[in-house]
Length: 286
Image 1 (cartoon, rainbow, N blue to C red):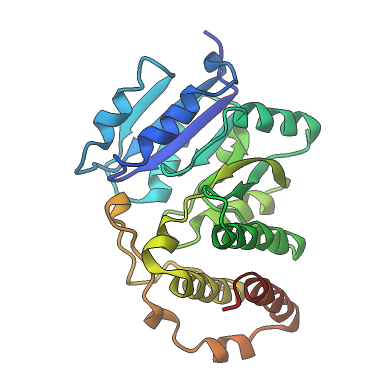
Image 2: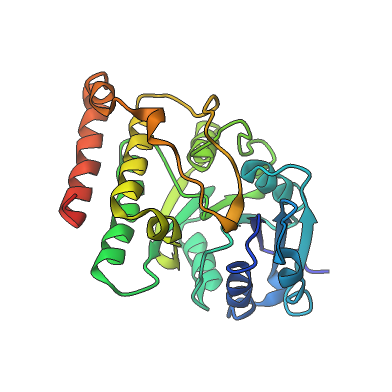
Protein backbone atom coordinates (compact mmCIF):
# COMPACT_ATOMS: atom_id res chain seq x y z
CA UNK A 1 0.00 0.00 0.00
CA UNK A 2 1.31 3.44 -0.96
CA UNK A 3 2.07 5.70 2.00
CA UNK A 4 0.26 9.04 1.58
CA UNK A 5 2.31 12.17 1.10
CA UNK A 6 -0.37 14.37 2.70
CA UNK A 7 -2.70 13.66 5.59
CA UNK A 8 -5.50 16.26 5.54
CA UNK A 9 -6.90 16.65 9.06
CA UNK A 10 -10.28 18.35 9.51
CA UNK A 11 -11.81 18.82 12.99
CA UNK A 12 -15.56 19.42 12.97
CA UNK A 13 -18.51 20.20 15.18
CA UNK A 14 -21.91 20.76 13.56
CA UNK A 15 -20.48 21.49 10.10
CA UNK A 16 -23.05 19.78 7.87
CA UNK A 17 -23.37 22.97 5.81
CA UNK A 18 -19.70 23.55 5.04
CA UNK A 19 -17.80 20.26 5.25
CA UNK A 20 -19.29 18.72 2.06
CA UNK A 21 -17.95 21.60 -0.04
CA UNK A 22 -14.40 21.11 1.26
CA UNK A 23 -14.60 17.34 0.73
CA UNK A 24 -15.83 17.95 -2.81
CA UNK A 25 -12.83 20.24 -3.39
CA UNK A 26 -10.53 17.47 -2.13
CA UNK A 27 -12.27 14.98 -4.42
CA UNK A 28 -11.57 17.33 -7.34
CA UNK A 29 -7.85 17.75 -6.65
CA UNK A 30 -5.46 17.15 -9.54
CA UNK A 31 -3.09 15.56 -7.00
CA UNK A 32 -3.22 11.76 -7.15
CA UNK A 33 -5.87 10.45 -4.75
CA UNK A 34 -3.69 7.55 -3.62
CA UNK A 35 -1.14 10.07 -2.34
CA UNK A 36 -3.35 11.78 0.23
CA UNK A 37 -5.71 10.73 2.99
CA UNK A 38 -8.41 12.74 4.75
CA UNK A 39 -8.89 12.32 8.49
CA UNK A 40 -12.14 13.83 9.69
CA UNK A 41 -12.27 14.21 13.48
CA UNK A 42 -15.77 14.99 14.68
CA UNK A 43 -16.64 16.28 18.14
CA UNK A 44 -19.95 14.38 18.46
CA UNK A 45 -21.89 16.71 16.17
CA UNK A 46 -25.60 17.04 16.78
CA UNK A 47 -26.42 17.53 13.10
CA UNK A 48 -25.69 15.50 9.95
CA UNK A 49 -21.96 16.28 9.72
CA UNK A 50 -20.81 12.67 9.98
CA UNK A 51 -23.46 11.41 7.55
CA UNK A 52 -22.48 14.10 5.04
CA UNK A 53 -18.82 13.12 5.36
CA UNK A 54 -19.57 9.44 4.77
CA UNK A 55 -21.03 10.28 1.36
CA UNK A 56 -17.43 10.83 0.23
CA UNK A 57 -16.03 7.60 1.66
CA UNK A 58 -16.03 5.90 -1.75
CA UNK A 59 -14.57 8.93 -3.52
CA UNK A 60 -11.52 9.78 -1.42
CA UNK A 61 -9.43 7.98 1.21
CA UNK A 62 -11.54 9.23 4.12
CA UNK A 63 -11.51 8.17 7.76
CA UNK A 64 -13.95 9.60 10.31
CA UNK A 65 -12.97 9.51 13.97
CA UNK A 66 -15.30 10.52 16.79
CA UNK A 67 -13.48 12.50 19.46
CA UNK A 68 -14.49 12.11 23.09
CA UNK A 69 -13.75 15.78 23.74
CA UNK A 70 -15.03 18.91 21.98
CA UNK A 71 -11.77 20.78 21.71
CA UNK A 72 -10.27 21.82 18.39
CA UNK A 73 -6.67 21.30 19.56
CA UNK A 74 -7.55 17.87 20.98
CA UNK A 75 -9.27 16.94 17.72
CA UNK A 76 -6.32 18.08 15.62
CA UNK A 77 -3.94 16.11 17.82
CA UNK A 78 -6.11 13.02 17.59
CA UNK A 79 -6.16 13.31 13.81
CA UNK A 80 -2.41 13.80 13.68
CA UNK A 81 -1.77 10.78 15.87
CA UNK A 82 -3.77 8.62 13.44
CA UNK A 83 -2.20 10.10 10.31
CA UNK A 84 0.11 8.12 8.04
CA UNK A 85 1.32 10.90 5.75
CA UNK A 86 4.75 12.51 5.60
CA UNK A 87 3.02 15.90 5.87
CA UNK A 88 0.05 16.73 8.06
CA UNK A 89 -2.15 19.54 6.71
CA UNK A 90 -4.65 20.94 9.19
CA UNK A 91 -7.68 22.60 7.64
CA UNK A 92 -11.00 24.00 8.83
CA UNK A 93 -14.28 22.58 7.58
CA UNK A 94 -15.22 25.88 5.91
CA UNK A 95 -12.06 26.16 3.79
CA UNK A 96 -12.37 26.02 0.01
CA UNK A 97 -9.57 24.84 -2.28
CA UNK A 98 -8.75 25.26 -5.96
CA UNK A 99 -8.27 21.98 -7.80
CA UNK A 100 -4.50 22.49 -8.02
CA UNK A 101 -3.99 23.26 -4.32
CA UNK A 102 -2.25 20.06 -3.17
CA UNK A 103 -0.13 19.95 -6.33
CA UNK A 104 0.83 23.56 -5.68
CA UNK A 105 1.82 22.87 -2.08
CA UNK A 106 3.94 19.88 -3.10
CA UNK A 107 5.68 22.09 -5.66
CA UNK A 108 6.45 24.71 -3.00
CA UNK A 109 7.83 22.07 -0.64
CA UNK A 110 10.10 20.78 -3.40
CA UNK A 111 11.34 24.33 -4.02
CA UNK A 112 11.86 24.92 -0.29
CA UNK A 113 13.21 21.62 1.07
CA UNK A 114 14.25 23.23 4.36
CA UNK A 115 10.58 23.73 5.29
CA UNK A 116 9.27 21.96 8.39
CA UNK A 117 6.02 23.84 8.93
CA UNK A 118 4.09 26.15 6.62
CA UNK A 119 0.97 28.10 5.89
CA UNK A 120 -0.28 29.71 2.69
CA UNK A 121 -1.87 32.99 1.82
CA UNK A 122 -5.64 33.02 1.50
CA UNK A 123 -7.91 34.63 -1.06
CA UNK A 124 -11.47 35.99 -0.82
CA UNK A 125 -14.42 33.88 -1.85
CA UNK A 126 -16.09 36.85 -3.53
CA UNK A 127 -14.29 39.55 -5.46
CA UNK A 128 -15.46 42.56 -3.46
CA UNK A 129 -13.40 45.42 -2.09
CA UNK A 130 -14.35 44.62 1.52
CA UNK A 131 -13.58 40.90 1.36
CA UNK A 132 -10.40 41.69 -0.52
CA UNK A 133 -9.35 44.14 2.19
CA UNK A 134 -10.03 41.67 5.00
CA UNK A 135 -8.05 38.97 3.21
CA UNK A 136 -5.09 41.29 2.60
CA UNK A 137 -5.07 42.16 6.30
CA UNK A 138 -4.94 38.48 7.20
CA UNK A 139 -2.11 37.80 4.75
CA UNK A 140 -0.08 40.85 5.72
CA UNK A 141 -0.65 40.12 9.39
CA UNK A 142 1.05 36.73 9.29
CA UNK A 143 3.88 38.23 7.23
CA UNK A 144 4.40 41.01 9.81
CA UNK A 145 4.47 38.57 12.69
CA UNK A 146 6.92 36.31 10.91
CA UNK A 147 9.25 39.19 10.05
CA UNK A 148 9.22 40.24 13.72
CA UNK A 149 10.35 36.82 14.85
CA UNK A 150 6.92 35.71 16.07
CA UNK A 151 5.76 33.13 13.50
CA UNK A 152 2.00 32.84 13.27
CA UNK A 153 -0.65 31.06 11.22
CA UNK A 154 -4.35 30.38 11.18
CA UNK A 155 -5.50 26.88 12.06
CA UNK A 156 -7.46 26.92 8.82
CA UNK A 157 -4.20 26.13 7.02
CA UNK A 158 -1.13 24.71 8.76
CA UNK A 159 1.12 22.05 7.27
CA UNK A 160 3.77 20.31 9.37
CA UNK A 161 6.07 17.34 8.93
CA UNK A 162 4.83 14.31 10.84
CA UNK A 163 8.27 13.90 12.42
CA UNK A 164 7.88 17.32 14.07
CA UNK A 165 4.30 16.67 15.12
CA UNK A 166 5.50 13.54 16.92
CA UNK A 167 7.36 15.87 19.30
CA UNK A 168 5.19 19.02 19.33
CA UNK A 169 1.40 19.04 19.35
CA UNK A 170 -1.37 21.63 19.76
CA UNK A 171 -1.77 22.90 23.32
CA UNK A 172 -5.24 21.75 24.37
CA UNK A 173 -5.30 24.19 27.29
CA UNK A 174 -5.19 27.29 25.07
CA UNK A 175 -8.66 28.74 24.55
CA UNK A 176 -7.62 30.98 21.64
CA UNK A 177 -4.73 31.17 19.17
CA UNK A 178 -3.72 27.56 19.77
CA UNK A 179 -2.68 27.54 16.12
CA UNK A 180 -0.13 30.33 16.59
CA UNK A 181 1.25 28.77 19.77
CA UNK A 182 1.66 25.50 17.85
CA UNK A 183 3.66 27.18 15.08
CA UNK A 184 5.86 28.90 17.66
CA UNK A 185 6.47 25.65 19.52
CA UNK A 186 7.58 23.85 16.35
CA UNK A 187 9.96 26.73 15.55
CA UNK A 188 11.25 26.80 19.14
CA UNK A 189 12.10 23.12 18.68
CA UNK A 190 14.21 23.75 15.59
CA UNK A 191 11.57 23.78 12.86
CA UNK A 192 11.74 26.14 9.87
CA UNK A 193 8.52 28.02 9.10
CA UNK A 194 7.55 29.18 5.61
CA UNK A 195 4.66 31.28 4.31
CA UNK A 196 3.75 30.41 0.73
CA UNK A 197 1.98 33.11 -1.27
CA UNK A 198 0.82 30.46 -3.72
CA UNK A 199 -1.26 28.33 -3.90
CA UNK A 200 -4.03 30.07 -1.97
CA UNK A 201 -7.05 28.69 -0.20
CA UNK A 202 -10.33 30.47 0.54
CA UNK A 203 -10.47 31.48 4.20
CA UNK A 204 -14.06 31.66 5.39
CA UNK A 205 -15.20 35.09 6.58
CA UNK A 206 -18.41 33.76 8.12
CA UNK A 207 -17.46 35.09 11.56
CA UNK A 208 -16.99 38.51 10.02
CA UNK A 209 -20.31 38.16 8.21
CA UNK A 210 -22.07 37.26 11.45
CA UNK A 211 -20.50 39.87 13.73
CA UNK A 212 -19.90 42.73 11.31
CA UNK A 213 -16.68 44.49 10.33
CA UNK A 214 -15.97 46.52 13.45
CA UNK A 215 -16.52 43.71 15.95
CA UNK A 216 -14.59 41.23 13.84
CA UNK A 217 -11.62 43.58 13.54
CA UNK A 218 -11.70 44.86 17.12
CA UNK A 219 -11.84 41.36 18.61
CA UNK A 220 -8.89 40.34 16.49
CA UNK A 221 -6.85 43.38 17.44
CA UNK A 222 -7.56 42.87 21.14
CA UNK A 223 -6.40 39.28 20.94
CA UNK A 224 -3.20 40.32 19.20
CA UNK A 225 -2.45 42.98 21.80
CA UNK A 226 -2.65 40.47 24.59
CA UNK A 227 -0.58 37.96 22.63
CA UNK A 228 2.12 40.52 21.81
CA UNK A 229 2.57 41.20 25.50
CA UNK A 230 3.57 37.58 25.97
CA UNK A 231 0.28 36.41 27.47
CA UNK A 232 -1.51 33.17 26.70
CA UNK A 233 -5.17 32.17 26.79
CA UNK A 234 -5.23 29.24 29.19
CA UNK A 235 -7.34 30.97 31.83
CA UNK A 236 -10.04 32.63 29.71
CA UNK A 237 -13.49 31.88 31.05
CA UNK A 238 -15.74 32.91 28.16
CA UNK A 239 -14.69 30.25 25.68
CA UNK A 240 -17.31 27.74 24.65
CA UNK A 241 -16.96 25.51 21.61
CA UNK A 242 -20.30 25.16 19.84
CA UNK A 243 -19.09 24.65 16.28
CA UNK A 244 -20.58 25.57 12.94
CA UNK A 245 -24.10 26.07 14.21
CA UNK A 246 -23.02 29.28 15.89
CA UNK A 247 -19.79 31.23 15.59
CA UNK A 248 -18.78 31.89 19.18
CA UNK A 249 -17.00 35.20 19.67
CA UNK A 250 -14.82 36.56 22.43
CA UNK A 251 -16.47 38.85 24.92
CA UNK A 252 -14.98 42.35 24.66
CA UNK A 253 -15.14 42.50 28.47
CA UNK A 254 -12.10 40.23 28.58
CA UNK A 255 -9.91 42.99 27.18
CA UNK A 256 -11.56 46.27 28.20
CA UNK A 257 -8.56 48.52 28.68
CA UNK A 258 -6.80 48.40 25.32
CA UNK A 259 -5.01 51.72 25.80
CA UNK A 260 -3.39 50.63 29.05
CA UNK A 261 -2.24 47.42 27.39
CA UNK A 262 -0.60 49.30 24.55
CA UNK A 263 1.22 51.63 26.95
CA UNK A 264 2.82 48.65 28.71
CA UNK A 265 4.23 47.15 25.54
CA UNK A 266 7.98 47.20 24.74
CA UNK A 267 8.91 49.51 21.88
CA UNK A 268 9.60 46.72 19.37
CA UNK A 269 6.20 45.12 19.95
CA UNK A 270 4.54 48.52 19.97
CA UNK A 271 5.99 49.27 16.53
CA UNK A 272 4.67 45.95 15.22
CA UNK A 273 1.24 46.68 16.65
CA UNK A 274 1.23 50.10 15.01
CA UNK A 275 2.04 48.47 11.66
CA UNK A 276 -0.88 46.07 12.05
CA UNK A 277 -3.28 48.81 13.10
CA UNK A 278 -2.10 51.04 10.25
CA UNK A 279 -2.69 48.21 7.79
CA UNK A 280 -6.24 47.79 9.09
CA UNK A 281 -6.84 51.53 8.93
CA UNK A 282 -5.51 51.76 5.37
CA UNK A 283 -7.63 48.85 4.16
CA UNK A 284 -10.89 49.45 6.02
CA UNK A 285 -10.74 52.98 7.33
CA UNK A 286 -11.92 51.82 10.74
